Length: 303
Image (cartoon, rainbow, N blue to C red; front, side, top):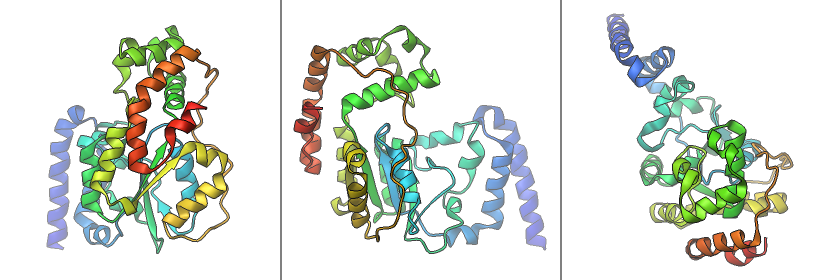
C-alpha cells in the first residue's frame, strides 16, 4: 500500500512538472497521464508483450495503406489500432503532434496489447525509410524483423504527391501552377518544389540512398521489395508471393479495394518533360535495380 501511494505521489508531481512545460511540448495532458500509468503500474504487463516483427517502412505514395489493410486481414498478422505508429521516427517527431499526442505517448509495445498468438505484429510507417536513425532503431528493437519496401514508378509518385497536396491544401501555392510546371521545377530543383520537398506529403526525388540503407542495415533475406504496379496488375499472385516470403498460408483476403487513393484529375505531361525526368532518374533506378534484381528501367520507360 505504501509503494502504491508513493507511485501516485510521484505521478502527481510529474504531472505538475509536465503542465508547466505543456505549451512548449504541445502534448496532451491525458496522454501523458496514461503514459505514466502504464510506466508505473503496468510495466510487467508491457514487458510481456511480443515485439513487433513486421514493418512496412516505405515508400510513401506507393500503396502502403492498401497493403497494410490486406495484411491485417490475415489471421496470423496483427496491427495496432493506428496504422502509422511512428515510434521509431527520427527524433520522435510524432511526440510533437497535438492531435495524436495521446496515442504516441502510449508505450509502443502496449499498442499491441490485444496480441494473442499471431505470428507477426505489423507496424506500417512509410517515413521510416527516409531516416537511417529510424532504421537503426528498428534493427536494435528486433534485428530479425521482416522489412517490406513498396516502390512505384517515380513519375507516378510525383503526380500522386502533387494532387495529394492539392487535396489537403498543404501547399496552397500549388493551386497557381500546373502539374507540368511542378514537374519542371522538380527537374530544375527550383521554385515551389524546393520549398515543400521536406513536407510530410513531399516527395524525395531519389530513392536509392534510402533503399540502399535498408539493405545495409538488415539481412537481405529479411527484406521484401514489392512494386505497386505488380500488386495492382496481379494482386492475388503478388500477395501470395509476399505470404511465401513471410512463411504464411494463403487465406481468403479481399484485394480489390484501393485505400487512400489520390484524386488524380490529369496525369498527362509533355513527352519532352517525361523524357527529361526519366533521364534524371535513370542513374537512381540503375542503383535500385542492382540492389533488388528488379527490371525497372525497361518497364518504366514504356509506361
